[in-house]
Image 1 (tube, rainbow, N blue to C red):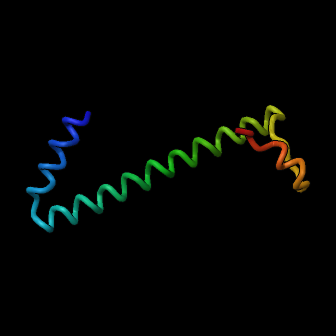
Image 2: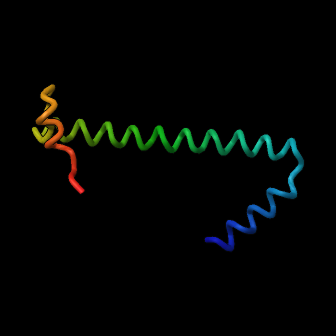
Length: 71
């Protein structure tokens, strides 16, 4: 991958400023779309956990602290 990445970086350096701007816009759109997909997957997973009764809701700070992963 790093060899391919390096080649891509070199190719991008050869682009005109207009092409670089267009590529930047495309990359930003791709990153946003990937993040949206990730959010949707997390949402769907949460819905499934809710249906299975695996979610715990609380406004108790002590309980919430206990629920956090400990290193």
